[in-house]
Image (cartoon, rainbow, N blue to C red; front, side, top):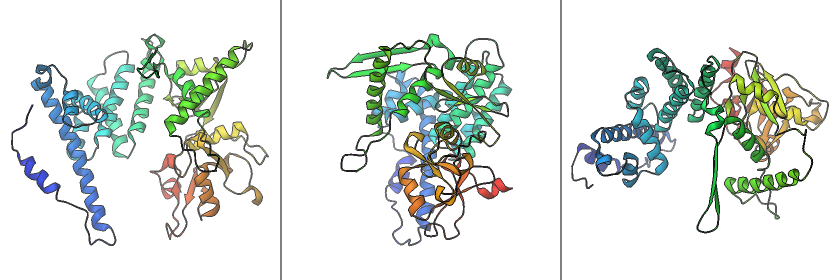
Length: 418
């Protein structure tokens, strides 16, 4: 389809392509302001793309051509992942009025809108009956509040998963999709160049076991000359899969009757909120009970600040059970967000300064950030909330204001104190 129509957009596009970053801006103030406007324009463009795609759907343009709107926008130049997101948002336009209003004025990026759309779908799938209009509005508002508070798309989806599991727990009708083993599939095929592609769609518990075992074996290894591992993260995971298969083959040759299965850590909030698994998020009460009698399980009770119970040991190296507790609290390297498998447990008060090896004196740091803390002027303190906070060197912040750990990066220490 050839577009010969001239619209006001053409004049706007001609003006936009001429805009460049300010050349005389030594402080960066004008560049910063201009960048914010570009982000606003980008968000508005996301909304308009979805709105126009929905209109094409209503007109049946793609259907008449024997295609789909998703394929049409890909042909126009939109990447497949963005086209999938656009098609999903377009399908739900008209059902999420509050979200659409915020997207229409540029406050929400397309990825965030898509997260709310997917989150609502998750909630609807886990409800045994159709959501009432009131419940739909309540859950939409809750996810939108998360989005406007700065939550990432992944965090919005996890919050929706928690809501869905709570709904599922209050009903005796049916099984949530995340727990339904009848939906499990595993397939593989050999490609033309003799490679094997593997695809699986499994329950949350099976996925949790898989991710945990792959992650445990996905540790970067330095090159022989000491330089960093040259493999990509995907290549490291592929190598980890081979290690896992070799270990499984060796284990199958031994008498494994009565031996524990994959170890899983289940975090149980003392507040009564749904229990969670570290990789796949909240679980239903039914799955929590199942895990308690299926395999080697570590149950960790946490308080309202997600701080596990004290599990100290008088040792210089943090023992495995204490490292688990610190991972539950910190989740990632507290400075850069590297995954737990890439981290070490750092003594906040150094061992040589009589620092204890316990929960309140440990935090997760990857090798690079560990070096910066020890040698580049960064300090770490434990806040009133029993979470670690970073103090940057004066070269970065002359006032040395406390920064929260990576997994709590939207918070401020004075807010916690208040």
